[in-house]
Image (cartoon, rainbow, N blue to C red):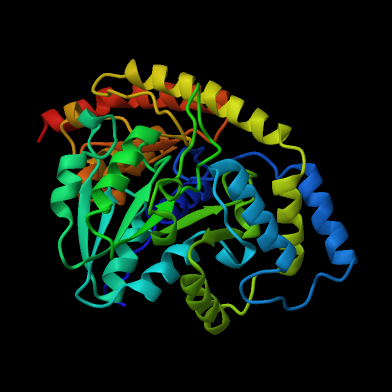
Length: 390
C-alpha cells in the first residue's frame, strides 16, 4: 500500500470544495471531465434498458452485443480486424491499466511510461513491484516522444511500454509517422507488450487523424488498446471503458474481472452500444466547443507574465511553462488556488518531468476561462512580491 499513489485532481477538488464552503468562488480548471451532459439518445437508451430488465449480472468480459459493437467500432476507426472475443468492457478505463499490468508484469520487470503522464501508470507499476522507467515528454519535442531516447530505454527486462496519444496532461499527439517508427523499433523487441491509452482518440483539432500502434505490422497481437466513453461522450459517471487485445490476454483480464468486480452494469452497456452506433453530432459539437475554448485559454495564458503556452493538438488540457515565475509547480498551483481562486494542477502531479509546468483543463465555459485568466493576472503581482521578500 505504501507504493500506491493517487490522482491529485481529486485531492485538489477536495481543497477547492473546502474553500467554496467558506464562501469563496472557485473556478474549476483542474478536473479532466467534460462539462457537457451525456447526449440525450444515450440517456434515453439507458432508461429503456432498465425498463427492459437489463439490471442483472452479465458476463465478466461484457455483454456479447457490446463486445461486437466495440470490435466493429475499432475496425471502422482503426482499420483493423478485431473479433468480439478480442474485446472486453470494464467499469471505467483505469481497470484496463490495472489488469494489463497485473496480467503481464512481474516484480523486477521494467515498464516504460510517459512522464509527465497520467499518474496511475506509475502508481500501478510501483504497486506491482516492477521498475517504473520514465520516458521524458519534453516541450522542445512538441510534447512528443524522442525516439532515440525511447529506444535507449528498452532493455532485456522491459516487459511493457505505455504510450498515450492524444496525451494527458500535455495535449501532445503522435502522428502515423511517429507510430510507424515506434513499431519499427519494437520489431527488434518481440517480447515487449504495449498499452496504448487512446481515451482521447475522438478529441482532435484541425486536420489531425487518430492512429493506433495496433495498426502497424506485427503490433496488433502485442498491443492493448485502452479506450472508453468518459471523454468522448461525457459519460464519466457511467464508468465505462474497454480494451482490445489478443484472446489470451482478454481471458486473463476476464478472470481478473470475475475476481474483482464481477461485471460491468448491463444497462450501461446497452447505452454504450447506442453511443457507438447512434448519431455522433453531439460529439462533433462538443469537440468544436473544446477547440473554441482551447484558443481562448492559450491566447489568455500567453498574455500572462511568466507564462508560455503551446497550442495543444488534442484532448482538453493546456500545459503552460511557468518556469519564469521562479516558483515550483506546486507552489504556483497552491498560490493560484488560494489567492486567485482558480483550481489547476501542478505539472509534478503527472511526474517529476512536469516540474516547471501547470495543467489547466478547459472543460469549462469560455466565460469562466476568461474570468480565470483575469483573476490569475490580477494575482501574479502578489506572487512576485512574496518571491522578492524571500
